[in-house]
Length: 213
Image 1: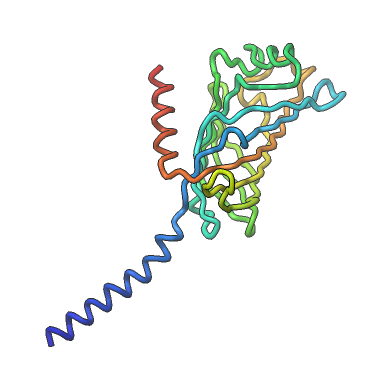
Image 2: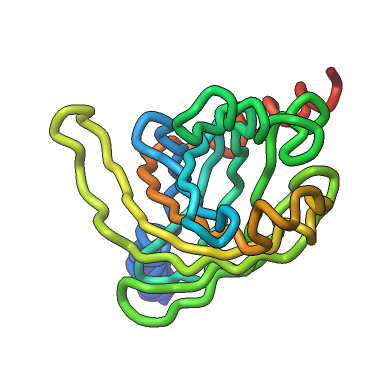
């Protein structure tokens, strides 16, 4: 009788282990942003003649993602505002000035997710908050999953996304030059991430270091 009970207990433990294994495998992986292959492009109206085009670089960040369960996805990214490039040195200086980005006071911006909503197999919406120029405001980002695969040159697993969003610059205190610079800023974001289980911890240490400085 004792032997039968022991066998039943062992079978139950093995069965539970078998059930838990797929769940463990399905846990979201953590990726660190690849700053070389991650870019933020923006466009803003210039005197209603045209739309000025510019770029910003990702400084650091991470995201978690499981393509089978988007509800577990998370993102935390820091943007280097001083990297702004409008294709002209004078324009770049004007953008960095106190009237616009004011990078001497706020050299970076930070976007963190609150939740991620799956729309279909490859599309979703990130509901998050943008901390920018001393203000924190909600910002939704429409995201498209491009690919998750091993990078044959890096020999590591990568995930790639494209995303879009639109913000109103006055919401973040940029009220100057209303007759020159449009109110709406359209963002196009291209992201590649490399699997790194410690990415979130590394980013948090870096953020705390910046605060201490």
